Amino acid sequence: MGCAVPKTRRLATLIGCIWCAIACDKTIAVPPALRAFQEARETLVGEIEWLVEPEGDPDKALRFVNRYARNGDFIFEALGDKDGWTRFVPETGEGWDRHPQLYLINSDGVWHTEVGKLFCTYWKTDKNDKPPCESAVRALRDIRGAGAYATSHSLAFGKVLDAIDGQQNDPVTEWNEQIDGPVHVITGTTRSGATITWYINAERDWNAERIEYRTSYAQWDMVASLRQWDGVWFPEETRYYVNGKLKEKVVVTHAKLDQTKAARSFQPDDIGIESGYPVMAQNLPPASGPNLRRWGGDRIITHAEYVKEVKANPAKLNPKLREQWSGTYHDPYLTPTQQQAMKADSRARLTHYYLHLHEGVWERYVREFIQRYKLNDEQSQKAWLLLLECQRKADTLVSRDRAKMTRLLNAWLQAREAGDKSEVERLSARFTRLRKPIDDLFSKRLKPGLERLPTRAQRKQAEARARTEAGGEPAAATRPARR
Image 1 (tube, rainbow, N blue to C red):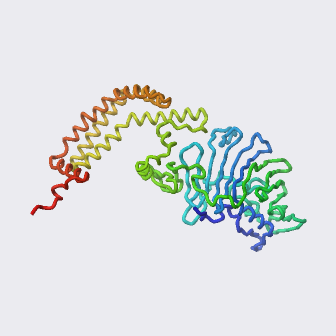
Image 2 (spheres, rainbow, N blue to C red; image 1 turned 30 degrees about the vertical axis):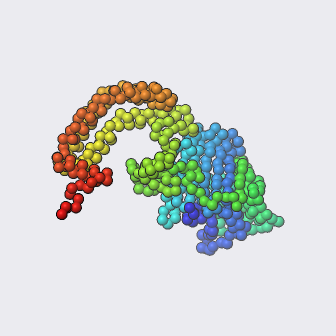
Image 3 (cartoon, helix red, strand yellow; image 1 turned 60 degrees about the horizontal axis):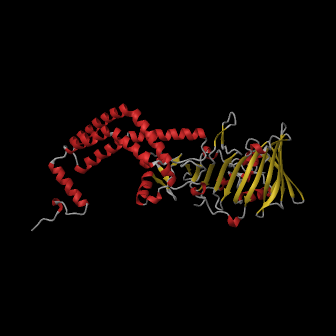
């Protein structure tokens, strides 16, 4: 998939932007060295592994990965701290979730999944190729913004050169450039009198080695240690200071920036979204039941389409989904507390499913019966009333024996998880005996009651249709008349 989204998606309004001074309504020419800096960052492709150390403390480091395809597709991975925590309680900073967070932006929109969870979230790009809503990209970080501004704010997605693009409230009104050997010293003076100074090295792919931001009340500084990665200069370490105190350190631990080896584009499977995963679309009409969206491996399909494909080729059923549906899937990133909660929830859902399995089966049987015999409205109403009567009696039986059934089902699920086949068979037989009164409602009341509804003519017509569908002799009404 090509990236049809404008370059504003990849570097916000950085690419090709012109910085304007409000004063006198005149456009101020941007120094070429800054444009070269932009170009170097905009054309960066490959993969970069990096971490952020708050106040330079390695024990608090957070790990990230960025991947950039040649067509502009973008991947962000948040891998968490040294203990694997990827999400934290804002008030306390305590970790509460360990699932690695993966994001993809391509021409279709924004994709998000969590490693270990068998689903994904999706924001579709609109027909005008506008970037997705802010909530879709709020958590993303872009290492191309390292050393682009005097604070780490430029690491936020879409803020790579926010030093310039973000000065809307205090725009640059004057540029000054001095050249000292390979270093271009560029200073922008804003309307309020604040100054932003870049020290850009022309011999190191126009990277900034230092940036100073000065106001009347505070000062911010960025200092970068540059290194070549596959022949490309990029900061290996970036330090951010506020009033002389180290605020944050960004460290690149590994980088592959060879243009010839970079991916052409990215697909959802590049962030682990597998065929069959449910797709929770955030800016599309709601979908549920058979219309639930799933990832089909090359496009989004409905649940009904996925079921049809799996029926035609059972090998297409994702084994992880099979485990999830059977209650045996193990999410390796769940904490013990979360695992217990998830297991309890899974057992509760499976218990409810088996306790009320007859409801869907009986309803489907009645619907197919009405269709088979082409029952009229009066007959159909009697069929549905008969079903309602049987369901109410079944509900009474389930309520009466719910505690026993639930204990049996929980024991059965435990035996199945443990792989104890003999115990599974024994408990299955006990459960079958316990629910025999419910099954008898179907065999002794619902089924015989339905059989009394069709007329003799309806039965003959149903038999004729069945023979025709089976490829037998055509029904009398459709056979050519004998001469």
